[in-house]
Amino acid sequence: MDNPYPLIKAVHQILAIVSIGGFALRFAWKQWWPDLLVKKSSRVLPHINDTLLLIFGVWLTFLIGQFPNTHTWLAAKIGGLLVYILLGMLALKYCTRKSLQWTAFIAAVVVYAWIVSVAISHKAIGFLA
Image (tube, rainbow, N blue to C red; front, side, top):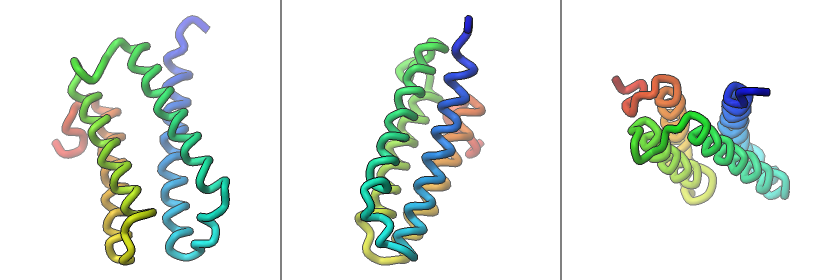
């Protein structure tokens, strides 16, 4: 394969979809079937997927030669990722009240959608434009 970019991008996109799907699934388990969250696979697999997602994302930045210090859309994506992680931790781990868990979950999904819009548009403002 002469140009690995299309394959690496497709894998990154699939891993991103698996990541949000896994987050939603774990949130549903927390709400209705919390016993499923204590299984080792539900604690380990998301970290494996998200590590691969990050690796493929970094690989993409090198393939396209665009980096967060020179391209604001990548910096925005990374900032959004940090907010998404924080909200996910609140939704799944640290909030004890159901209303706060739901608020953090919905906010995390909105931030995820914004990250996707930044990735598609290559504009730091994403769908907020």
